Image (tube, rainbow, N blue to C red; front, top):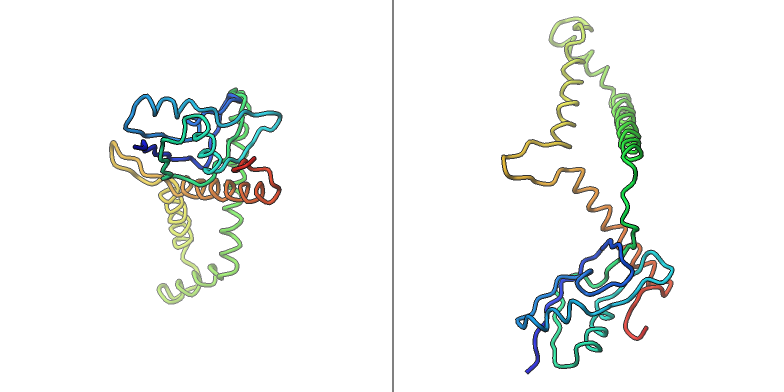
Amino acid sequence: MKQDIYIKLDNHVRTGHKEICLKDVASVYCGDGNLKTRAEQVVIFSFDGEEKEVISILYIYEKLYEAVGEDIQIHSIGESDCVIDLTDGKRPPKLWSKIQVVFVSLVTFFGAAFSIMTYNEDAGVPDVFKTLYEMILGEPSGNGVLEVTYSVGIALGVIIFFHHFEKKGRRDPTAMEIQMDKYEKDVVEAYVKSSDRRGKSLDVGE
């Protein structure tokens, strides 16, 4: 009777060692503890010059059958391809990290400010305020009351949207984290397709 092995392959993995085992790229489950350990220790491939590699789930099947034998039934419940990045494991200097944070913050701030200003011009917000003042006060100016409340409302909206309030002991992903996650998935998918076109991904028979 064949033993069932369940594999949940990640779509993107960063590692600091060149020899990649199954446990480095996937979660493994098997009713037989010894077989699970053997499967996790199977060497899938080793980095040789390249610092990024794409492997398919079929390539992993091939390596597992070669190492463990044919008396297993493999079930994949994860991704079909995985991008593996080889890193040196070193963190960038704290000063450099702070400079990057400041730079990104400034670009985001001024970019958002420019976008809001161009939107205001395109939508004719000053003319709208003027019309509202004339309708309510009978004159084209209201000492900046609408302008101030409009600015405060935009600021509060941005703060709440990007750093929303959360309950104690519970943390939902912010809008920025969701967008970054989508961006990373798009990058991984694009790299996988590019590697397939160039014949650089590790697949069965290679």
